Amino acid sequence: MANASTDLDNAEAQRQLNNNNTRLASSSGHWETEVTSSKLFECSRIKALAEERDAVQKKTFTKWVNSHLARVSCRIADLYNDLRDGYMLTRLLEVLSGEMLPRPTRGRMRIHCLENVDKALQFLKEQRVHLENVGSHDIVDGNHRLTLGLIWTIILRFQIQGIKIECDDNRETRSAKDALLLWCQMKTPKLNINLYGLAFNALIHRHRPDLIEFHKLIRSNATHNLQQAFNIAEQNLGLTKLLDPEDVNTENPDEKSIITYVVSYYHYFSKMKALRVEGKRVGKVLDSAIDGQKMIDRYEALASELLEWIEKTIGIISNQKFANSLTGVQQQLQAFTTYCTIEKPIKFQEKGNLEVLLFTIQSKLRANNQKPYVPHEGKLISDINKAWERLEKAEHERGVALRQELIRQEKLELLAQRFDHKTTMRQAWLNENQRLVSQDNFGYDLPAVEAAMKKHEAIEADISSYEERIGVVVELAGEMETEGYYDIRRISARKENILGQWSLLKELVVGRKARLEKNLALQKTFQDMVYMIDWMEDMQVRQVLCHAFDTSLIKTCILSAVPCSLFSLLPRLPAL
Image (cartoon, rainbow, N blue to C red; front, top):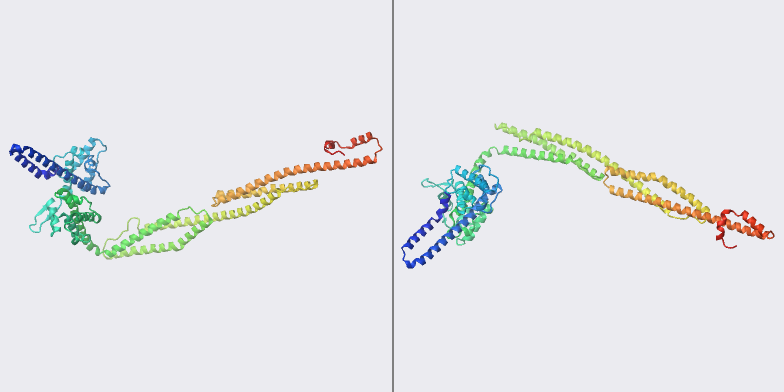
């Protein structure tokens, strides 16, 4: 059937060619060259028209296939190539028939493609679709004419075969092409159906007069009229734009392509009419019970809203992640208190109203002898009560956890205040002692230096006893770090500063003591020198008083009287 349908369009041209051949055979010999040229021209012309027709059909059928494959999120780019593996062909037949075909065989080999296409063709045969001279190998090989014929056969079977229009005069029924043409004529009685530029606009205007101002169309501007009709059908009716204006506004438009496009209009408007009739019928049935249904819908909506709020609130208050600061936790506690005193009571009242509404619905249904209403699973009053119990449990746990966290944050804040107070005092003490030990005012004599040494020893003892207080600061910082205090960086920085100042102070103390010890040793040396000078002056006085004694005797006396420790200083003394 596919082969016959594709060859039918060339029958007339072929007959003309045969007639020309007959005339050529009876013509005289001197016309033979001219007739041969004419025959070649006609053959090329017929071939060009056939190729042009095939191109239009390919474009139209490709868009038609994609309009149905879009339901299953599939798409083809080339009609001849993309149907060769049989997968897209199977999906297309499933969409059109609403039935499940045998699962395609996996694999990309030719034998797999043949098997898949054969499954699709076998399904068509089961649907009583006659396929003549079409085999699976023709589709797998990408035969253009047979592929187009197969798609046209599918269109006839699933889109056009069911179209039947009853005539008003003799009640005769027509089908397929005649029925579709009759439908168009019935919808556009005052218009020549061959005027395609106005015909498509007339079809749309008949069913949707709000989309097209038909009286403003210009009959001679066919291309503009077609473009307008195609765009409106695509944008407002959702009909795929299978044709372009130049495909229709031509001397010999392709009949199959136009039928394929027009049938989409037929199905859309027929479905729209059926839906309108069905809507009126259903509306009459629902009018008697509209009030009860509204109440049921309201119950469903309120129950869903309340359950959604409960689940959302449980998710929020079950989150045990609190702000890591006293101010943040206080704000969270304030928000929780607001929820308990303002938000929750309103929802509790809604819960009571929901129970009253369900009781009212049941009472009205019983009064009308209607089937009792049973809420959907999960929206029963018992389900709402269970959800409310879970909410109260989560609320209790949230309150306990918040208060515990508040106590912990208050403790940390007190520790931080204590730490700041102690570090402030320690800083002042360290600064003062650093200032003291940085001064080398030891005095200029031995008693002053000895007094400075004793004072330094007192400072050193005081500093040594202060180390325990520095340790308290370190302990406080460690405790806050363990508890995760939010401002631990500042605490650690102050702790490190105190420890650094403490280390510097100890270094200054050690350095000062070393300098003080050197100064003390030097002062003692100066003291010994003073004693030596005094002794020598005393000896000079004695020499004056005892000039009569023998020089050797004086030297002996001197040598016996001078301490041994002073002999080392004699070379440095000036000559007396």
